[in-house]
Length: 451
Image (tube, rainbow, N blue to C red; front, side):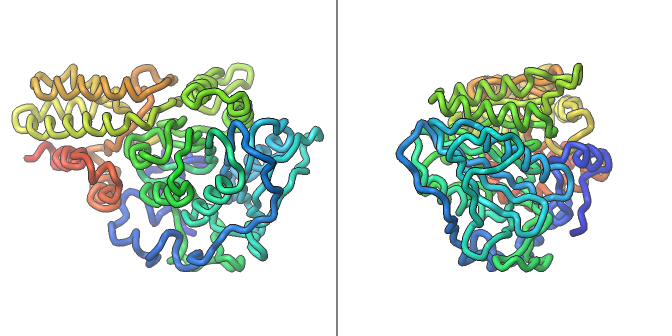
């Protein structure tokens, strides 16, 4: 599949980090009509319309403190496939005392889509001896970023392995507002490569949310750990309201190293097995995510930014952001110059990402530059709502990153043109765009303040 990236700098970084790739068909400049190109009338498309998960795995032996699904959506030719295999081997060795530990992995080869149940600790490192199964008779390869597959795996896991807490960990390429999950070897259920027009370059945010709803069947996850880039994003997390209580995610790109892939994954299991409160699990994972930041002694953590977020507070944040957007639109005629100055002053994440920027940094810049009383009040409301939503936020950028990003494309250059097209197209399909006026403010910004 031909791929293009939002910028050469982003492309180079993501190839190095193995995260956050934006496939060509879903890059920011894609016209709105292209998102229906596959003709999907139902979740997952025609090739997966009749897919039903039917693995042969051991039955549950009763309720446990938690059930945890690790979803390794890593069918690529770069480093994620071997990294995910190492994660499975590590999880295979974890004492399985108080957690129903289920792992889905789609690696880098045809025919390697598998579901695992970690029934007991395997004390031989480097092996996988716990029960594993194809997803259904004759189905050894699936498009792992297909939302129907994701919904089926989640639903089957929760149906068959009861736990007091319900947890999900996703390891894949992330794109924040653009979506999550890539798969380079997409096939139908018989293992035949799908035509390009039927492939899913990335799981869009509405598809992710709908897949969660279908898999949960009225239940609620206690926490999601996004082992993926850019997912600590207002638009992405707002989409998950009602499906998940807490999230751990990064607003910047992240890298696959021992801390992010192995230490934190093992820590997640240990905290779940100890029946820790989900909010505490989220907080401790976020703390660990930057516990060894830097590269001294090979201790790079994999994260420059990471946060734990209370998704139950996203409605309050949306309301405050809606107020801010309306205040900025109203103030633009008289305060255009300082508003645009504040907008432009918000730094990018080390030139890694050109479309999503830190929300806290933006409100700080507004508060400093704009004197309009309505904007001042709205800024205070947003900052109060963001404080309430953050369980923990720490970063390596000083004031440039504070836990949550929001869609803020540049005002000049190719990225500005791409941002305008995305804003007019797929952005409008997000729940945040439908519920808030942020896009109205961005329209004025793109127009140079309305002149």
